[in-house]
Length: 417
Image 1 (cartoon, one colour):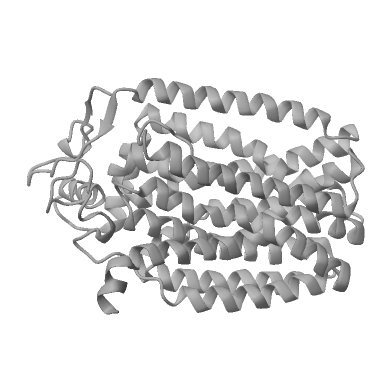
Image 2 (cartoon, rainbow, N blue to C red; image 1 turned 90 degrees about the vertical axis):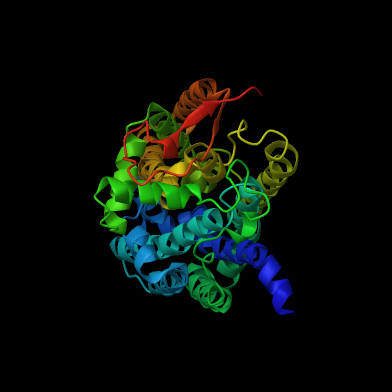
């Protein structure tokens, strides 16, 4: 039994991350279900109400506290702490006497708690699967962010109809805490000095050689005179990453696309109710069908796209960024992916809500979103053209290697595809 768990523990980690993301994204991604209930009770505008969910989304993806905490205490401790903060925020929101308090209880506490869980989970999967199967592993783990919409939308709708939105949040908080803690205690990082998920298929990495993550760290430490400070290493790798045009193309693409996606996470339920005059049951059915479509899309891309043309198809943000910029380490990749998502979520929903309050409908918001999606796609196309014919290869840095772009640890060689 021990050897069985030793062999398949990396896949068990993916399952744990899948469930953890399912839990924290449930109420955050389905904020539009409780959006109208909160708006009616406090008689607030769509823009102000949208800020509550938008703040939670922003902090969920863009929180500077989690990276140093993960390095100091490990992903398990940070995940469990995030679960406590997240569920306390949900429970506290059920008692708020005014919408202003919800900015702290839901916007800050739920956002910070979910970020601890989300960033720990994503970085954990990238650490366990840095090479082959990285795309499939992240696709499976991130299915939790889609499946949660499918499950939580009707669940919250039933609970709100039966007990009201306040009691619905209390019940949800209790269930989320129990499930998250029961799995979070089993979280473990990959053993030091090896990548268990990729020992037998490390792609372009030589057998027995260091991983890109370790090499990037050692290169950065060598540049600082071998001081070995993790914080300085990460800062140097981040500076090097930000000097590359491809990084900015990817960041801008994610930022623009998530300016649009924030509308569908926060304001979509309001749009269906006020612009299209959907009933509560119709809104729930629409959200569930959207979740089903998203799940099927990720599964199909994982099975039929990522495998055959690994390194060419840039579909899932985390795995795509890891494929292109993985030499900088999983911690830098998560920052490059999650920060633009958080910034886009911060602005997107309040902007759409403000336009609704100003124009009396969401038509202008939809037109602007369509334009932003096009701009995001253009950035991805430019990135694909620049990266075509290139692949990430790893060469161990020498003892005297430095951090400039011509460092062998970050060589990008052309290959015939």
